[in-house]
Image (tube, rainbow over all chains, first blue to last red; front, side):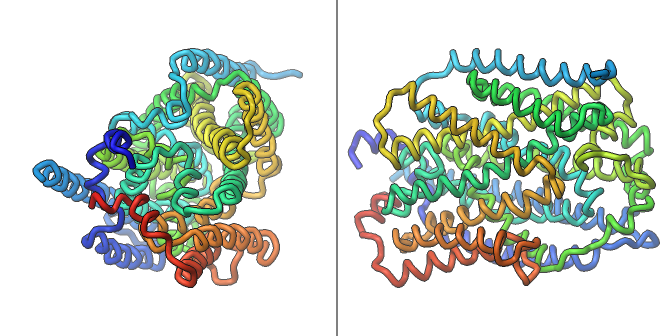
Length: 96
Length: 501
């Protein structure tokens, strides 16, 4: 890569490692957790039982709510983690 | 033809929308700078806020607004829950994959999704470009056909069936071709704004209806859950392994969907990628969760004892609005919004098809040296052919759009996405494994879908339709790469820029 081409590349490219960082393998644990959640919802909450409810709502609606609220929380969590990690790495790169 | 005044209003709305978009397209084309990177990926300069709206406009479509509420009623609540399951894996791993795509795009100046794939494979460039283009075209044709269904179905249902579904399908496609010939698809951003406004109005209207018509969400949910057809709607019919493969195979495959990948190329910096992901994923909570849930439950609560006659099930949504708000401005705005939503998605897909023909096939695979004018004409003709062929899946749809997506369109994207994501993160993958995996994945997808197991889910194990072809593609990538020499050290260092790590 020529010096000119190198200059056109934004700084933040070098703070993103090409292969997963060690802590990113934690996603495997997360995927195991959500597999359990999906199994629970599909086996226990996708039912037509008008006589029973959870939080005064039909069970399938609660199941969908559990899944959607999980990914909503995860969305903010992953943003915070990645944003902090990249900012920290960028600071170290500039100092170096 | 004796049409009611209301049917004329619906027809005029469609025509008026297209005329407005043509004018907007003309204005947009005057403002565009020249150059491929500028035209297809905005020169890689889009900021975080623009990216939020770009992601949302590209992801959000008639699928959520019309398809999901309809499928809840016609096929069952579980099909919408599967869409929620998809987000569990997609949202969580979004930064991991999107940042690597952004990184590779900035390092190597990609324009089309095929650029990234071919460069990373590192060999067999011409046949690989053609193979990947064919795979994307196959999926795109089904995708566009799938979007024609709600476009024509909603318009037809809005006229109470006075203008039939097939007639609206023909009118819609004719207008679209005129629009394409005049370069109107450059106005995608304007269509996105209109669909966004209509979506917000429809969303507020549904919240209002939930509070005033049913007296709150709990009452709405119980009205739907105790309706006559509820015992069939709220039952699990698919095996658990179908749900799990939707989570692990389907959800993750959307991290490399060709027409969305270019949004990462267009991002100004990594912050734009992250903020874009955060904002759009939060927006999906309203668009993909709250909105279809309210609409689907609303249809069940209102029509749960006797479903109205519709040509395609997506017509339930306008009928719900007619029932709640009558024929009037809200309905017109919602119709405009629905036309704009379908329009913006088709624009994005056709822009992708255009870039593939223009850059991947004419310029890089075939190396044709033809004038700019001839090149533009060939590109336009192919794009129009795609728009026309896409009518086939929509002519007599045997299933709602959502089921067509799950069964046919998304599996085709998955066999592209899975090996690509692994190659991005695994430097040992080589050109032999890279070429073989797409060939094996696509061939097995076609064989399973049309020859060996023609009935859904196209496998005897109850797995999501894209699972087996994706696994075959990944297994081929790993096995062939390990059995053949690794890519050269020089290639790996330059591709991954290892000297800077």
